Length: 288
Length: 336
Image 1 (cartoon, each protein chain N blue to C red):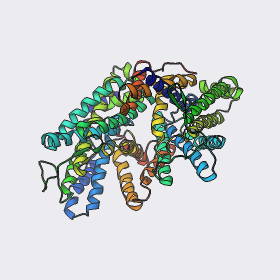
Image 2 (cartoon, chains in turn green, yellow):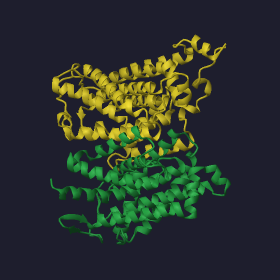
Image 3 (cartoon, chains in turn brown, red):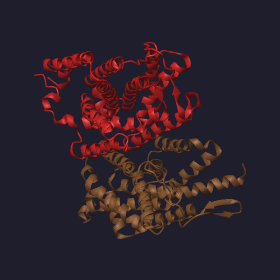
Image 4 (cartoon, rainbow over the protein chains, first blue to last red):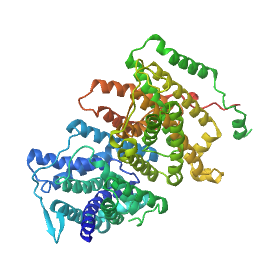
């Protein structure tokens, strides 16, 4: 165990953490807006990965080239989800909300399994391949690019939410729905927008990952679990918190795997979740 | 007279005669059913109905009565299955006693998990149970003592054996086993529903702050509900292990068990004693026939149906199918 191996693990964790952060920020945005946890978040990620897979398999588009298309597909998916499912359960009890998005998750996952079988697929010869070596530390090129793109997307999202007028309207809706409506912010459309943006984030993460990850119907489960943990860690509804939380999770995952036992990676992350929600339920970082 | 006094006057076992008659004749029908020589498939279907009714009743105790949504309840099913099978495989202890050990261990685990976790509420609790359910699967997949990923191999007896709880010739003994547990557990749920415990749990569910200000220890009652719920889940795991005699982590800690417990309860009517039964009677035959009909092609068709049903119920009838019944059956009449 040298310093080099530890540094390698830290970098791997950091790169993964940035992706987790982007996925979690989509979840956090949706929760902040309407207090609904999207239990189908991982399944939407899976859809994004499959979209870029099929764009590659059928049209020969590289995942990086097809990012805009994937974003549009997923954003459309989000708006449809809002108008056909979420709209009806906005005022329902939390139990109903959990069950509804959970039902959506089961449906999407099994529908993908039905259409595309549970086989593992991958995109062969993507544009980004190989790895860079910097003084003995290896960084996969697709991983590196994915993290950078996710970080940029995250910064873009943060800028959008805090600086633009639409973003401020989103924040206003999330803080006080009725007051925002009185001031002329149509909350229903804001919710649809929130779902569109939230799933757009997932689309970026999904299409970046599709060039180096296996793609199969169950792929989203672990990512959605990590996203839940990240959102709880960062404080439900806080977008900036997601960034820190995502990085913490990535580091815990890779360092825990290196120092203790890699087969229990998930458990370390779960342990963090339990510790945080029990001792600091509002999350380490505040809201917005 | 105040409502409280009315409630005190009313005995626990007071049901109207019509309902008692219906329930008793239904029970008699279930007891006599194997005598008319039903097919193996019908017996299997009935066994599945009993099992899922109990699983969802168990979920109903924590999810319906006390309002805490558990998404990882399958863990207790798996633990129940593993405990009884492990004791039989390693020590030759009869599953009859193994079941009791399973119940005790599940109760202990539920209390240990419940003490920190039931302070959480809402989404936090739901996500935490989801994580715990998956954690148990991961642990059992890698735990060498219980056979890791390949699971436990139960030695088969050459003949039917009551001691080993293995019946190879006919499904009838299994039918009665599941029936007994079904009746006992529904009876317990029915009593809980009408007892002080049930009222307190519902008070915690409906308004935790008001309940607390009335002197109800919220955390304590949530933990009690969680433990009871786990104790109901455990024997079903043990019996199911005896029924299929293959114990591996993927089957016993299957996520589907947690899903279906929630789905049946929400479908039938959450928070009602008979909700899970109604949900089971509708959903399980549907799922079993769908599995036969589409068998081998997609595999996930039944799950797809579950997902759609769950969304439709949430949109159109969140109170479940039981709410279509007239209210004089659902709620007890006030004594005047």
